[in-house]
Image (cartoon, rainbow, N blue to C red; front, side, top):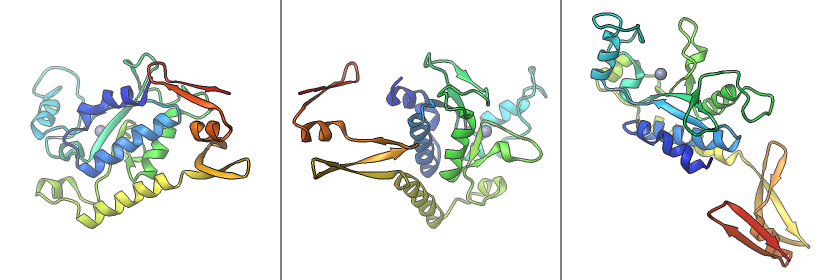
Length: 223
Ligand SMILES: [Zn+2]
């Protein structure tokens, strides 16, 4: 599964989100993927009319109750909340199993995604005391749904603060200097105690020929 494929699964659900929330969600997908955890955004913006339709279900309409929020009382209605699920290796099915360990690192994938989301500035519905909502992530900038309904929006300073935080989160990737035969080449990165180095730069510094096949995602090094 490529990152492009994983991102394409969520593309439609990212539309209509507040741009900064959308950017943070894209980082979440990318950073989860880099840990070997593909995720999919299953809910993004929900219009007030859509929310009212959902609220009617199990009340004035048939079907089970699916929400306690009337239109305008969910952060989803203002493009500042998303719901995620794990994307299974078939690239189609999703999993809500919060204990699943698909990347076999002995940590629950779900909680690894939540940890990244919090670093990016999201609040997690799993932390709520009265009603926990495990797939739910929101970035509300201290505004209530009533304030959003009244047309209030985050300030430019609040948005910039989150963008800075996202930038910082990326910079916190530890860089690794790479020296080949006494000569410094392009930096690598340290992820979970492993050093990743730019293969072409290292190979060529050693006098090898490095080839990349786009079709099969395969690098070949020949000397
Ligand atoms: Zn939600």
